[in-house]
Image 1 (cartoon, rainbow, N blue to C red):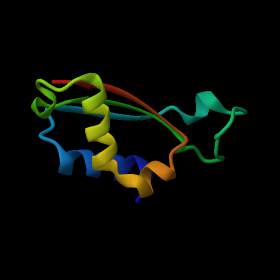
Image 2: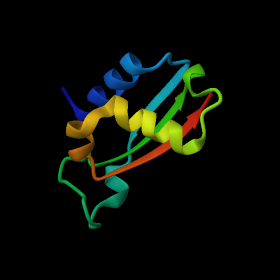
Image 3: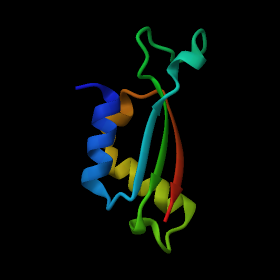
Image 4: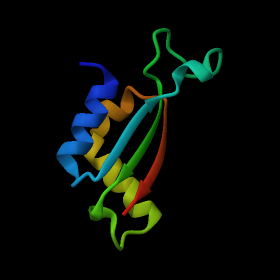
Length: 85
């Protein structure tokens, strides 16, 4: 299973998802710190979930990090989050 698929599965399991995009932006970071040949090192996640209603930006980010878990986060160099209720 790719990291993209792992991210998607973890978020779909952890939240009520109304919209989800998991974008591998690794290629645009070629030559920068953390780039890994073959990609899957830099991601952008756009997630809309009613679970975020009433949560601060920091609480939303913490919730996503919790859903992804330390193991998966440890294998990702960069993660940009766009989270909406």
